[in-house]
Length: 83
Image 1 (tube, rainbow, N blue to C red):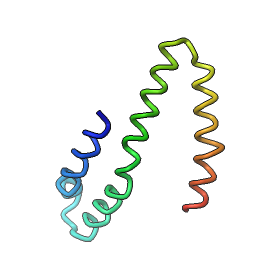
Image 2: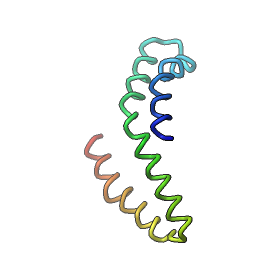
Image 3: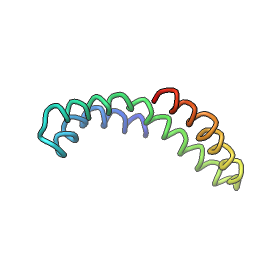
């Protein structure tokens, strides 16, 4: 499902950006940013699926630990590195 969302986002990005501003420079920047974050969409879908499985199995604490590791141990250092 997230792959379909990624493909749909790929095709509607220019139209969606134009809906907010008629400025071509701003639209180009918005579309370029959208194209850069497209690979993240399947990863988000994977994370939502994993969280749903943990919740259905009654393993909310394990899911919370997974969220902590992904956010603070991996995400924050990567964000600081790429900033």
